[in-house]
Length: 390
Image (cartoon, rainbow, N blue to C red):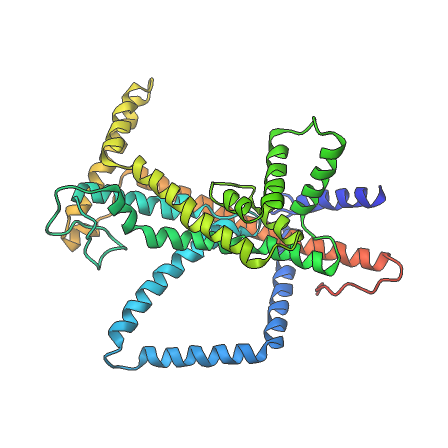
């Protein structure tokens, strides 16, 4: 009981370490945690000196190949273009799922709007053969437009971006898996709030099975599905939008599910199955006739219906003009549409919140380090925990 009350007290203290409650302590803890992570990173690099040296040599050779003039530069440019484009979407996918406690909703902010832009342009131009460049930074219609466009052609056009983003989200699910696996192999409990919550939930299920709420039952269902069915259970959880998937990673790590079983099922589910479902939904939603139908239905909204129609009509007309505008001077003209202005402000707010959540999460992680040291000093016969506190 003393251990439970102590954990509850520490958890309460940790939840109060946020910038809007304790700004000074939160910022100091954030700096300390950054220092700890940097020291750990350098130490691990030093332990793998040979691998690091080999990687540096390979990077140097690739850089020499990149800057050397020759016929190979055409191939280098193609590889560089596709590599950077793919790495961009993989990075956004990682940010969406790992997020250091919160995650940036990069599908809503980046991939979804990109698919929507390609969809609107494809229906307007009757083609997906957009001139490259300026695509993908800007979409304009080709000189010869087609007669019709299919959904499958649009899906093929954005397949690389969608798969790379999905692969990034699968990579972002690895930290909970490795954390739980390492704790199980070392014989200690994972120092993670989600794991503690899951453990308490399992005990609560045995004691009071009829008193669980909807979210508790959902979490338990994910845990049981992954534990009992294995690969198929992981694939099922990864193939649908599932905010509770971190529990699947913790469960797989705790029960020592092989890495490639977990990551393979997660990669297939997120990068192939779920991404095709999300992609098809966005394309269907932003098809030309559906967009026009939605704008038409706005007028039936009481009081503000007709006022809402005008900004959306202006935005849609603005997008159509840009698709046919090949004049560079005209293409640089800033759009004053209120919808674009609102979307830009939403992006700024969400990115700012994401950065604040990173600071709070890292400060709370440092609080866990302090508590771990206190426990190691209080426990008889145990050596001092090796954690960074400087």
